[in-house]
Image 1: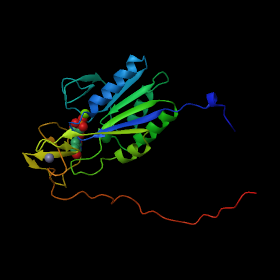
Image 2 (image 1 turned 90 degrees about the vertical axis):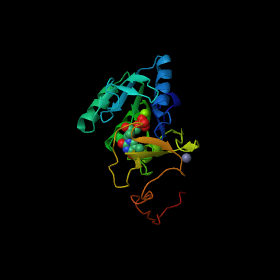
Image 3 (image 1 turned 90 degrees about the horizontal axis):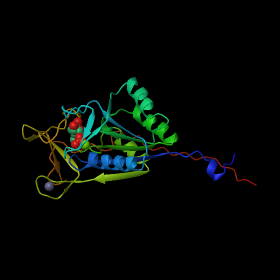
Image 4 (image 1 turned 180 degrees about the vertical axis):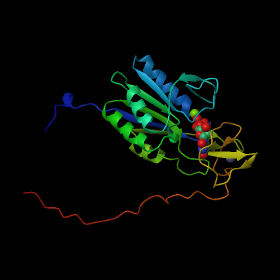
Length: 223
Ligand code: TMP
Ligand code: MG
Ligand code: ZN
């Protein structure tokens, strides 16, 4: 069946804002959401409940500059799915999600459904964890996104561009075997460039990528 152009159901889009800590991801997310609101679009902001860095504002997303924006805090079980779908009701045009790296794979399906329903989805999150390895679902989101922007911070050690996040425990580099999730800010983390970044084991990249298989597919020529 062929659609006339104006009958094709309009899908939404996915924008991924990623980068190291202290690179301005949350600022950028808030800027994009503000612009949508100036245009009278309906916006909903969501954050992961794990992120409780700002005790004064548990229901806000907060940039490192201290700028705040109200956000619904959601968890990571079945409630999350229902809650996000409920928040993204019919009249909502734009959905912003901060700290997207903390969500589990179920969020990918929800995001795809919302894009199909015409919503514009903006997500902000860390592309790399403290070990320098891709953070959870981020590679998938970056692959399916319509737009990916990667922000850089400034290396605290040497002043060059920084795309890594160094975790420091009592002032010493964290160990590769430490847990991936550890909420914190300047007391635990600093932005570092590739040369100044320190870890006791180099990133294990590619271990979870399944091997590609190849098979000849029979095709028949039409006509
Ligand atoms: P930010 O990107 O908004 O600065 O916040 C990142 C959050 O993620 C912060 O709470 C620290 C946390 N985090 C981890 O849990 N594991 C990690 O490997 C890194 C780099 C950060
Ligand atoms: Mg942030
Ligand atoms: Zn450096």
